[in-house]
Amino acid sequence: MAGLAKRLHASGIIPFTTTERILIEFGRGFGRAQPLFSFIDVGTGKESADHKIREMLRIMVRVGQCKHVFFGPCHDNGYLTVLEPYKLDDKVAPKFTLIETTPAEEGFKQLKFHRIMFKSVFMSKKLLDRVRRPTRASTPLPLSTTTTTIPPAAIPSPDPSHIGSASNSAPLQSTTAIPIRNTNPPSSGSQTPMSTVPTLTRVSTAPKPIDVFSKKKTTLPKYYLMHADDQRIDEPLPKVDPTVEKRFNMRMAGLGKNLCNDYHLHGECKHPGCTYVHGNKLSASEIILSKQKSRGIPCNVGSDCDDVNCTFGHHCRWLKDCTHGYCRFEGYHDINLKPRTKHFEDGSTKIVDKI
Image (cartoon, rainbow, N blue to C red):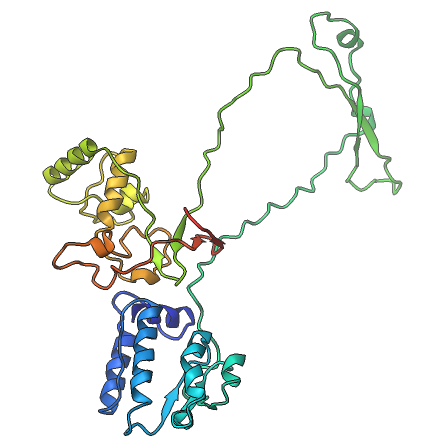
């Protein structure tokens, strides 16, 4: 349900925060409106909803008491293979009415089932996939249009004694004439001619030092990974020396409270009353261990999270090998960890086969 709430929020239909429960309250109200109405939360993952819908359809079309089936799959070609066998069944086919929200895909039209639209009930446009965060647009600085006026009489002549002599001076390059336009209006009404200033450039014979180190630190763009079914997956963390991990755990036990993730993982804590540990910066290995510890806490949004800075977990670390009797990541064990796309902070997406 959190994923659907996120989609509705992206389209501006409902607000979405961890404290707002608008969609949940709507579902409860829908279920109470009529005894036979059901609003079912199947958890995270499109395949969970697909499996339930297919099975419900398979059973209900064969039940004698079921007189008609109103089904709304016309936006998803994945259901064509489900409906194809019913098209040839004379007993079942008349029971179907396909509900169109967005215009039906061509394959559904070819099924020849009766189709209907309820424009006052269902939206006719697709929901957005995810919230796109606005990016900062770089504004180019305006070019300066200021020009310097130098009267022709004020142009200094080069000193011949400094040009011809000085055997220990640097050699001279060719003279370049730089045009200078007078931008002040002439007092007599006549135009002031454009003047040129001869410039002399000295070429140093001393060897120039070469800096082989980049002065500008390269910052890699932030991103998160999703698999083929558009669920977020956590990128594997590098392994840490067991000795370092043991020392880190002993240190945490001695502190008696947790580290501040904002301070140590994001570089800044904006909460004046923060009670978590700040102090000295962590080493590279300790940062990995801190990320691993943070991933033990489930993200509120689950696998629909699109925050590149989120350090919480989006599925169980052990997946099907989990041996915990009560795991915080219930429903997040059967996850495909093969990445399909990288989603960057600026909203761009890149298809990947492997990390």
